[in-house]
Image (cartoon, rainbow, N blue to C red; front, top):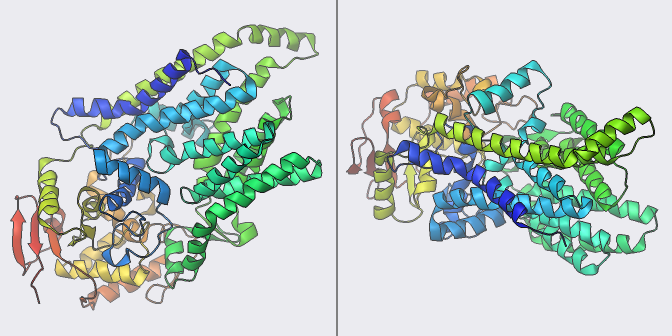
Length: 611
């Protein structure tokens, strides 16, 4: 067993504290008690996404333990592929006791520290090198973005220098996000550890545990589930070829148990494909057809990383073959549509799998370079000199990474703390909704910001679907959007202005250095991304017909004409109308229903009893 000494525990705590740093500094810097990590306006993309995912956690808190569509009342019995079931159940249950915001804050420490310890555990078993194992965890959790966007070009060098050193306006990397990577990556590491032991120690117990953990990944993160199944299949074929009967038996058992545990998910997936809204949902989620959305550049990047690993690795041991199979699985996932005919956001295999595995392999390769022997006397002399100082080099790199992590997150907090606050007006409005409305009531608003946040901070549902989480058809989304637009008497000219959107604004809305967020364009930027997600941003996507059109420009034209003659329907539940500053700023309107609450910033009207 690897020795988990005080130094390793300290390193894990420091890693967790690095991710906790913004949550400590921002409330202190604000000094008003209004800090919240769950904000969407003016923040970077991971923060936007984590607020979006938090709606599913809120749905668990509101009694929907198996979350389907967390936003729309009529869709509570329809599966959503975008909601990770197990992480949402766990985190939502935790939130029931300590609140969603505290779940995010504590999770930033707990899950990153756990990830570090699991990486250390596996790496130490493979190398017996304590400092290299610590370095692997540090490089994964702190240096990941240097792998995802390697600073080999002037543009990338400027990006890294500005974004993480001179003027950080976002967190270190993808590990800042719940419930996706921050929660499920430790689950992936547990599966890899069981896989390692099942091959290294040849015991059925480890194979059974690995099969269970792989099957559970189906309910947690389908990208990891697919990659593990492919990796196990590759290892199985290799074992059969080498006539390693014991390993082949264990790998077959892993696959068998993994499939058995996954059966309910597979049945739901099969049913989902038969739904009439399947094509609409998949096109909003960036479904790629056979030769569309190819990720050749990403594949080349990771092939280069693997070739370095292959060249410098002396031993062809269990660790080598597991990571070889994982890399092959990830590369298959990047361009899976070539084989299967379709792929769903294949680029995820870049920043949720291959990037992480590369971080571990880069440190492994670095260690191999330091420990290899060379026949050439000059190379041998240099190798010996480096080898003799390898311990000091590892220590220095670990300290530099930890210092960089603390600095970058502290600077991020200093630069952006003003954006991460839920002011008193918002809090009063959410408190009123929670205290005076029935659970699962529907609050209608035009504001994209409020559509995202009402379903996090209250027990209410939204009226306009979230295109990423929702299982509504495109026609239903359009019908709901235009119903609200007509209620607020929005002019066709303003709708046309919203449609005149630059895809480069997707997610970030940043001005040039210093990289401050342009808040004023928030609604214009997200008006299409929120309900239709990626449908109109990627030319390579499979397009379903909306209003009889397939191209984005043609569709926008048809949508505008449709809106001019649109008459709202009463087919969807609507209990309350929320009026915010956004609605007041873009239209002249009169709400005919009863005003039930107002604080000057927000007005809430009740439709109960209305004809």
